[in-house]
Image (cartoon, rainbow, N blue to C red; front, top):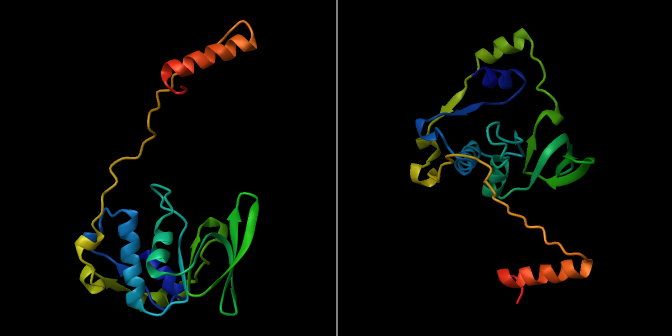
Length: 192
């Protein structure tokens, strides 16, 4: 709730908290589906900002999933966002530095620490935010049925064990090594 109050204190028009026991332990697809439903319920929007990736899996799917569901452009890993005529110009972080991308609005942009921190608020702004309502929506308010969001659940993430066997093919000369390799490949059925 403290983050919701800080958002109001920094100038947000409204804050909607989506809270329902049905929404516990969701996968990325279900989270994107619920957030897209809430965005549509709020109404008209120009720009949607989401986090860059999940803290637990580092998947980075939810923002992309919301954009796909809403059918709007997405720019990921933004460094700087600037409004232009009927769109937005974004500096997108890449390995070599950044690239500039423009997109029409409405659009979705994923952000993280490259974009900076939310500005500090004064005590007066924080106290004023206490008088403003924070809406709480349940699943029924979003007209979401559990069957629509129920997807396979992630049980475990692991690196598959790979049992690699390597056999060194040798010979007294390069030609003999090549012949021995050809014989071995024929024996294993890789070459006929």
